[in-house]
Image (cartoon, one colour):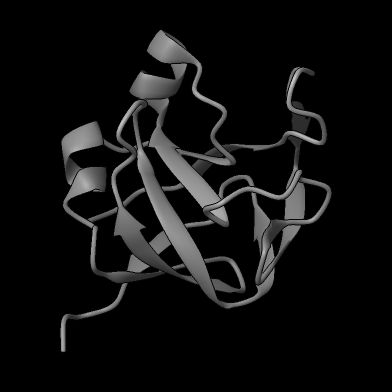
Length: 116
């Protein structure tokens, strides 16, 4: 499964628009500068982002159904390792927890670990 990071966003304030970035350091609590949320990282497919504009942090150029199939899997983007934990109940994409903090940049490839 090949995909790359199309765009990156942080949302410092809940009522303000997102800030688009070229790269961001992702800590255990999520992207630096992002307001604290229940789920550390929100990933979404580019098609869902264009259509619904969810407040996602990482936009991937992959099919939404393929992204949803990553729930339960470990993925790597740049220097950051994530565990895809669930699909949101009220918006597109998937949520992930940070396994290993690191920097993610636009055009980084999505690498998916083999299931154990």
